[in-house]
Amino acid sequence: MGQKTHPIGFRLGGIKDWQAHWFAGRTSEYRALTLEDQAIRRVVQERYGDSGAIASVEIERGPQDLVVTINTARPGIVIGRGGQRVDELRADLESLTRKRARLNIHEMRQPELDATLVARNVAEQLERRVAYRRALRLTMQRTMQAGAQGIKIIVSGRLGGAEIARTDGAMEGRIPLHTLRADIDFAIAEARTTFGQIGVKVWIYKGDVISSTEAIRSRALDRMTAGAGPTGPARAPRGRGRPGRQPGRRERAAAAAPVAGAEAPTAAEATAPDTVQEPAQETAARPEDDERGAARRRTRARPRAAAPRGSPGTTPRRRATAKAAAGEAAAPEEAAAPAGETSEHGEAGAGESQ
Image (cartoon, rainbow, N blue to C red; front, top):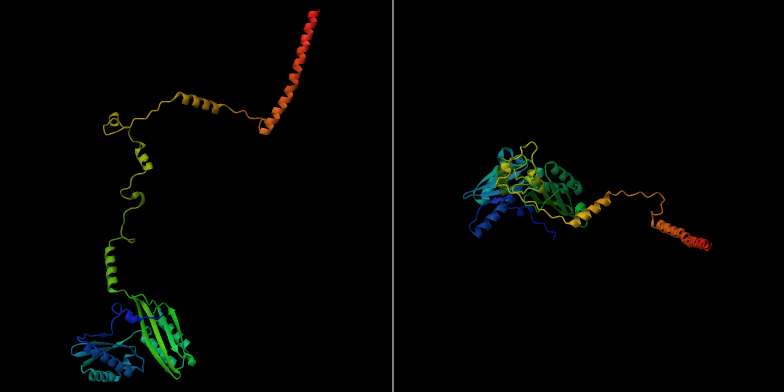
């Protein structure tokens, strides 16, 4: 946990390439050529290392010759006046490898985007006793202004002459270390100060690189969509216009309804053999249904008498009160009726007696 793999070695064979191109048949030959490559790079760094102009050295071997490509931000320093320094370097390489050497000097247009040159620049500032925070801030500003999408710098050691070594750093933008298509440059440098060595690590993110496979896929997609409109290839209709859809109830009713202004079908067309008419289902009406329906209609048609306001029958309490009052009024009438009958009988008896 916490360990980072080398960004360049992690991308070798993809968007990154090796800095040495040759083939060795035997293991012993491979070992000898690898040590020889290290010696060649050491010679180049010893000659031009103080100027801080060497970014990388690429080596390519043939059967009888050797091609060395030097990537530098200061080609004038490498070539020298009249090509003198290049001739001296060529002689040293031929004596070291015992092969005919050929040198190619490649100038770097944007040295601020090369991690090796940036790391070496920070180390030189630390050797001149520049405050490391100021050195990091100015370096990151120049790199981002040059077009980088992200940069991270980490320094480790006795920063500022402190008694206890520590690690500090700064970052600007983004550094997608696990994105294989991300073009990330990485380099390490050392600053030799009076109070010890300070290590410098630099990551620079230059953007994404489209591999050959992705480029082929994108070109194929472009060819497929070449004849399509601006919104892409046409597709099958959706919703009510999709093929194979069954008409709904409303659509069937609208299709069966006669169109206004259309001619009525003739008798022959109406009785055509291809027309199938379903017989209407008749249900016999029962007499009970007729009587109930007539009674229901009479009940609905009968007007309801509006109860007068304050009538006793509007609420249960008033109805009970009205019944009680009616019972009290009927009681004296019943009591008065036998008395009248007695008087009549009495009068009748009196008449008979007379």
